[in-house]
Image (cartoon, rainbow, N blue to C red; front, top):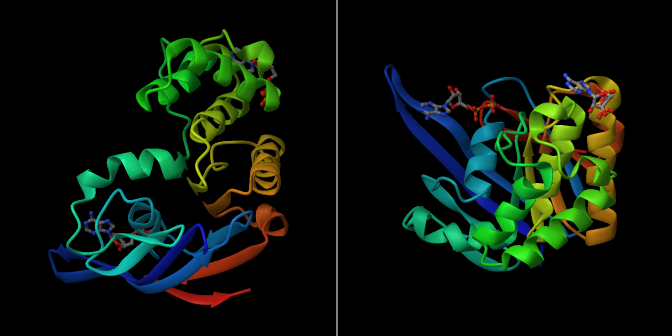
Length: 227
Ligand code: ADP
Ligand code: ADP
């Protein structure tokens, strides 16, 4: 089965002038090893899609399936999905949001410790991951000592730490220059190819279009085409 499958995903919000259809019946599959780009104007529902697919919010209607299991639907208690979320999904946001008083390796190890990995094992794995992302020399530095590109790669390492089959990224290169942005995108490509993760990246960056296996466009809460 696909790592992610959403069916008829819909989210309405009550706004001051009526109901806002933030997401309106989106159906989409992401296969293992597939890197999918999500494009669309501001307000088209891209972030809402990631929140629902990432089990951070319940849909008004529709379903989210992870690896063939139905996990989210309107009646589900989203807080109860915390363990599923931790095991199965890695998140990357526009800003790295690393904990400033922890080193790069401690930042990565923390997400393993939260998932009950013993501290020594977590630290060893964190160092291996940072090494694989060409950040071994940065492992003991705090985020303020790292460039923006390096910080974002640490954030990617953190998202990968628990080996999630699905990675959701919300404008991960928006705060980076084109060279660093390209490095992060190449990293996603490598992770999809070598670890078989399915990856969805919301982006505005037209320079990244050639990096994706598939691109979908959102408009007014709907998916208007697939290429
Ligand atoms: P995008 O990520 O493509 O910019 P969003 O998913 O953030 O779009 O927003 C889609 C629409 O839903 C927008 O009109 C936005 O104002 C609205 N929206 C998003 N979140 C909320 C919320 N919590 N309450 C009310 N309206 C919201
Ligand atoms: P990167 O290739 O990782 O994006 P840059 O080309 O921006 O890095 O910077 C090169 C080196 O200079 C990096 O190793 C980084 O640690 C260091 N550096 C960049 N900006 C800063 C900064 N504001 N404070 C400290 N070190 C910095």
